[in-house]
Length: 210
Image 1 (tube, one colour):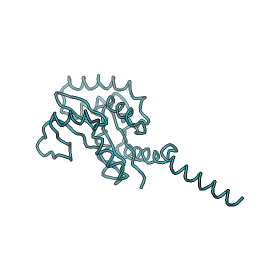
Image 2: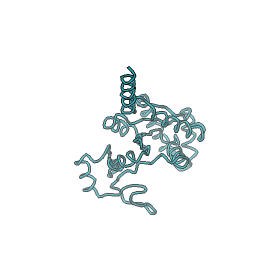
Image 3: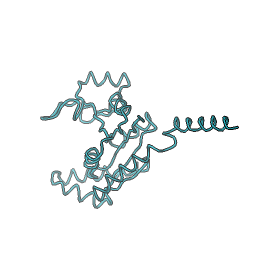
Image 4: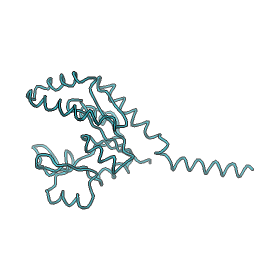
């Protein structure tokens, strides 16, 4: 069984990346969504190990000291991070692990795991992004303006990603994402052991024939 690929997905707030990820997991069995660890309290209906791994601040800081997190950040007095053991377990099972994370976290992951695949999801235009944020009907004009400003900052880091996926049509976007990930399995640098095996077998065959 071949090892899975860690796929880091980022995108603007309102790009629909969460919807794309859910649909990808629903359609295909080879994916696993990375579960983050956090110090925030569970909300009603949330379960430990499903939405998040809920830990105390002391437990989280112990994970930091032990280098047990691929990346972590602090937001509004709470820590959030990606547990190395969970990701490695799923990868060893042959699952392609999807980690939905913002740009700063994605760059940290790339530093620690250079073979990770980075994909950036975007709407077809900034105008469409604004329209989607307004269409939610849940955010104030001030929040929308803040998210648009944040998108402008994030756009500066887009070229650090391996692939760009435009989320114009959900079905097409999901299939495009799936094809990108599947094609990555056949990159030469991901198959060095197999390539070496073929080389050795070929040499042995040529030697036996001579």
